[in-house]
Length: 331
Ligand SMILES: [Zn+2]
Image (cartoon, rainbow, N blue to C red; front, side, top):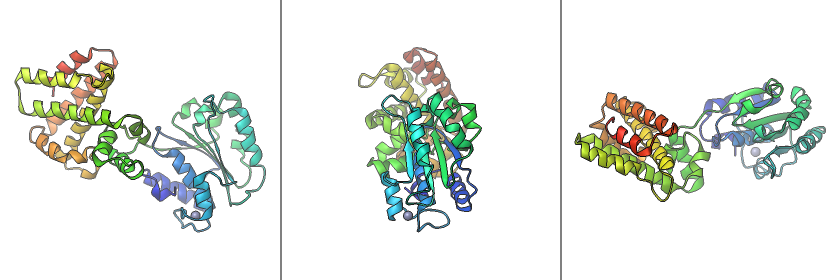
């Protein structure tokens, strides 16, 4: 997958491509950032860019034999080291990779060693890497990919330039779910709005759970938007805290509260007339427009803060029912 097929991270990817083109990208780098945002894909794209005979100044072609062999994981000069069955990356795997970098690239211009989930390197394996990271063999680049860079030894960190990948916008997550994972528009937005900017997280949950959570959140907002009647608000709270399909009350309420946050954030976006392309729940536009009449900027902000407090209370083990009841009177 060349750089242009990776969703998000535009500036960072352009910077990486420019540095690779000029030969100024350090030979040992860490791609750090949240789980499931495309770091490994970016490392593969870098390997393609280094080796593509048809590349432009900005990207590889993605279709030549070199690019497609790298994408399929069968290019002789691109090594991916990753955790084995034990969940760890062991010293033998590292030694093997280092040995293979001792020779000139076999079919390409530059050898790339990608250590995925680099935080799984055990201590001996990290120590075995030190000398190579300090002075990689000619025509070799080492890319350590990790969501937990701080788990690595300081001696490893100090030898690598760290490049930070951020979270994706919900709209970006949704577009990937639709394009690459056959999600419907509704399922993609529901999952993306609760994904915390990670495609990995969005794919982990069942789409039904995401859709249900968002529907429950929307239901409560529609009730509180139009009524001050305490009984109706309590009914709304009950609907919000009722567990669905055997999920634990606490997990389910947490998911619904995050869905509430996501919708309230979108209301804030609409009120401030910010770019509507950043809406997490763009597919719920009619609902958002209805709610907008009751939730002016201040109310949306207050409600957003209340949901935040509710999530914190839930984390501290407060009873889901009490949290939901309290919230129904705050928003
Ligand atoms: Zn190519």
